[in-house]
Amino acid sequence: MDAQRALLDELMGAARNLTEEEKKGYREIKWDDKEVCAFYMVRFCPHDLFVNTRSDLGACPRIHDPKLKESFEKSPRHDSYVPRFEAELAQFCEKLVADLDRKVRRGRERLEQEVEPAPPPPISAEKAEQLSVLEQKIKNLLEQVESLGEAGKVDEAEALMRKVESLNVEKTALTQQPQNAATMLAQEKKMALCEVCGSFLVANDAVERTQSHITGKQHIGYGMIRDFLAEYKEAKEKAREDARLAREKEADERTHREKDRSRSHSSDRDHHRDRDRAHSRDRERSREWDGRGYRDKARGTDRRRHSDYHNGRNGGRSRDHDRDSRHERDRSRSRSPARRGHRR
Image 1 (cartoon, rainbow, N blue to C red):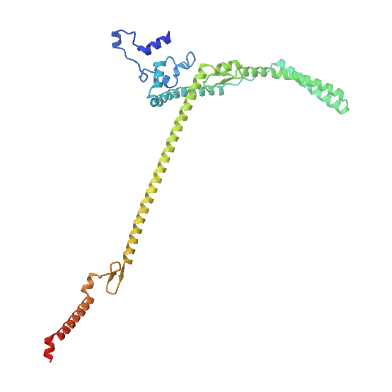
Image 2: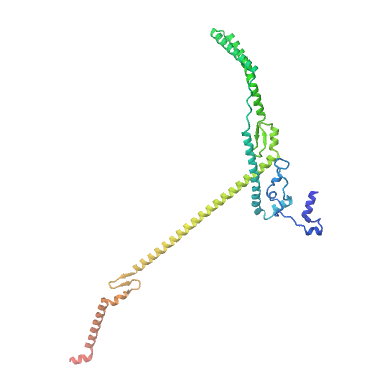
């Protein structure tokens, strides 16, 4: 019947049997609503673990619906909601475990402060007299054993030693019987404490009772809670460690990139400096000094500095040029016909 109802709810909706008036105030519950138990969605609800036990938490105030849980597991938002739901469950479980640990500490202190069995009461006057008589007999027999031993009567000495041993047994029975009874009573009542669920157990109890406690709801429930917390803390610690390693790796990679960039800039500066030096050397090699100025060997022309045209060397060159011009004019005149006729 429940399976058929669930199938109809899935096909036709949970509001299929409601009237039009009832449907107006009806709201369909979804897995991410506040009314739904997030603990039940993601793992387990602690309220379900201790039903009818001393640790019973009562009914959960939120909705536990297998269909909503299935919807949550199939939802594309499942992975994004799991960490939040697990964090809420871990917070609730940590409170339960903290309360339980306080209970365990109190129980441990109670066992440690348990009063030891009271010493046996003093023996009565009658027993004291019996002990005195026995001790005197034992003393006399030991003296006789010593004398017989010195006389070489070994067999008689051994017979008296057997009597001494018998008297010692009687003496022990008179002095130890009450104390042994108290010790046995204390051993029978000695208690132990379960560190998982905080229950008091009888030490050295029967195997059946011990097994019954281990398979009980309270022990299994607190075991599930402790295992979940250990797993959750381990996962968080691993996540923090992975994040730390990722940050260190990123920092190392950034440092390497900065070093590579610095080396690249330094190499570019060295390259430009070497290139400029090479160009300067090439320009120096392409020019030579000819006594009057630098001569460009590639062009074959004089590249005298501008100041050379205004110094004394420029004046000397001008005078030589003027003298050559006058000589040339004189030769031209001497060769002319008018000049030759006049001479005739």
